[in-house]
Amino acid sequence: MIYEMRLYDCCPGKLPALQKRFETVTLALWEKYGIRQVGFWTTLVGPSSHRLTYMLAWESLAERETKWNAFQVDPEWIAKRAASETDGPILANIESSFLLPTAFSKLK
Image 1 (cartoon, rainbow, N blue to C red):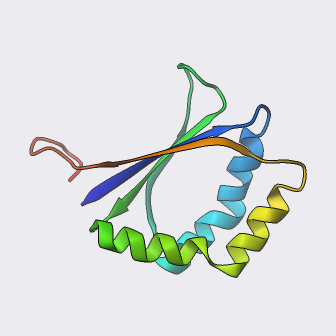
Image 2: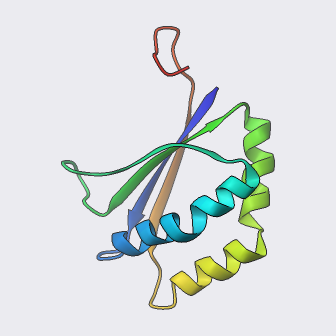
Image 3: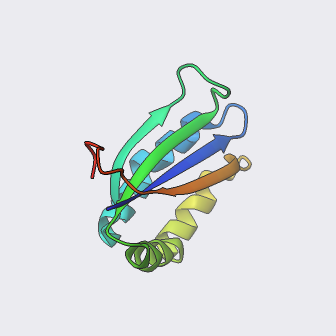
């Protein structure tokens, strides 16, 4: 299993809008495409209180490419993402890392 860690830095005051978009739009579309979430976190203590961190689980990078690309061009996603940003952009920056579990990791 490969894990993708994604860090979303929101524009000031936009974290609630991002969380709402995940809860009401994104997760249902991920289910449609078989995208598996591991979990979501907000920063309690750290460099940014405007950050949402989440992880996805993939069988391979090829699976990620196929499913993520299909999700990104989904007309419903494009329309609802645009609608969620009518008051301005939600995200200031996105970082993504692909992680492999070590032999001694509980999460494989």
